Structures are given as C-alpha cells and as structure tokens.
Image (cartoon, rainbow, N blue to C red):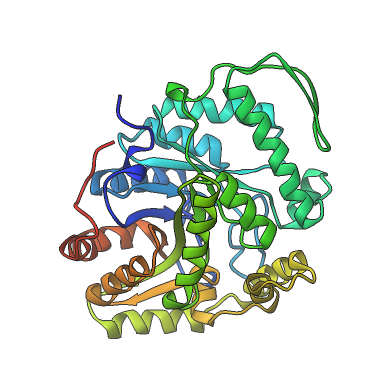
Length: 376
C-alpha cells in the first residue's frame, strides 16, 4: 500500500496546491465581469486538471457567509467535507483538503464525515482544522464565539476526541471543559488505520502553538520572503523539540502573462476595480478578533496591513505577478527561504492554471524544485 497522502509526504521539493476554488470569486476582491464561478462543474474540471498535471492538492475555504461589498465575494460556497468527497472520487492522486470549523462541527459527526471522505479517497484526504474568527458566522449558527485562546483550548478537546474515536478506543466517556460525552464510538476510522495529515493556519501565539503541536502542515503568512526565514526556522525548531516534523506552507496569489507588462496592466485593472467595501469588511472582522493582542501578526491584521495589490488579488497574501520567468523565480524564492508548499489562487482558475502548467511548471522543474507528475 502506498503511503497515505503520498504526493505531500514524498516527491517534489516544492509542493503546490490550489486555494479557494470552492468559493464564488475565489480570493479576488474586485468588481470585474465574469468572476470565478464556483460551480460543481468548474471545481470538478479544475480538480481533474490539477490531478493530470501533478498539482499536489486542493485547499478549500470554509466560508458560511459572504463578505458583502459590491462583488458579494464568497456569498456562494461549497461545504468542504462533502466537496472533498466528490473530488476524491473523481481523481487518482490529488490530495483534497477539507477545512473544518471545530466550533461548529460536533466532533463525533466530523470524525464520521472525515473518515468517510478518507475511505473514498483511499488515504488522500487532508484535514485543515480551523477554530474560527468570523463572529457573524457564529451568530448565523446560534453559537457563541469564545474568546480567542479559549477557541484553541476547545480545539484541543475536539481533536483529542476525534483521535480517540479513530483509535478504536470506544465506547468511552469524555469529561472536559467544552464536551461531556458518554459511550462514544465511531468506527470505521480513516483509511488504512492512519490519521490524515493535518493543516492549521494559527498565527497568534495560541494559534501557532496549536499548529506546532498538532499539524503536519503549518499554513503561515509572508510579507517579504527573506523576512520569513527566522519564523520558519523557529516553527521547525519548536516542532522538533516536540518530537514532530512540520512542513511550512503559505498562500500566494498568481497573475502570469506572456510579458511583465501584460501582468502589471492586469494587476492595475484589478486595483482600479477593487471591491474596497468587501476588503474593508474583512479587515474590520479580523481586527475585532485580534483584540488587544500585541504579537506582530495580530497587529498587522488589526491594522489591515498589506499592499492593495495583495488585498485585491489574494486577501493580503503574497503575490507573484509577472511573466513566466519572474513568476517561477518568485515561487523559487519562497522555497529558498524555507517554504515547503504554496497554496495558489488565480482570478480564473480554469483559464490561468493551464498557462501555469505550460510555462511555469517546466521552469520549476529546470530549477530542480519539481519533477513533473508524482505518484501516490
């Protein structure tokens, strides 16, 4: 039996995934004609194309409520566990992530759903565990959003319950601060009896600590690549001290055109048509969640730091904009400072991914960062 999540644990030095395609408009905050349509047909075509060209994974956004503004970004989304089931059934090697809000999914239901998806994909499901930060979504569910650090304490209990179910330790009782459960059981566990890889994007002190203790892939942000080296090194050191190895990933917005001029012109077009109301709504929501925390990442979120180009193309994430040579160089630059994987978003995934496959992936192969389609 091949190793579970084989394309992520073996193979290419620089791993790539597609990010946000399950949401209308993806991660592009602009009022433009023909924004990304997150239909099932489009997601299925995209997953099968990614599978064919050797992209390692697809990462969804768990979104329950859009960000309003003129573009109504993310107002239509697919729930990520059921989305993952469909894509895993229709692909051969692609790892499909499910992004699960710990506070909104009872652990017994989530454990059963995730194990089912993992059997469908025969060990290609990846868990992206999130503790939530958007209060209007909690209100929509009628769930009180806990204080920031308490959400991660709840996450500790939630994940320990899921792991205990999957270990076959039932029936068991659980008495915690957030869950009181009796006679718990939930076979089957994941495919092959092995726990799926876990991603977490915690960046606050409590969130990052949770990620280092429990995740196999830490999803972290970046400003200038070279400014990320110390943080990446520290993440790896802290994980190793806990007896674990952690990959570090970051999101990247991509505009790749035959010439730098064409790419820059398209970026200016997006900026000229930025949905500033939606961007402002995101910044306000995240600023409220950071409270008075003083760590640099929380301060940056509270202040809405980031060039408008990053906000409009990738919700504040790093962007690679240019011709194929410059985009390949930027992706290589991110790997050189320590990132193992990149989660890419495009304005139009089905239009832009084929060009990346044709022009950028061969350049990354020549740089020794990828070797084409891998197995597993």
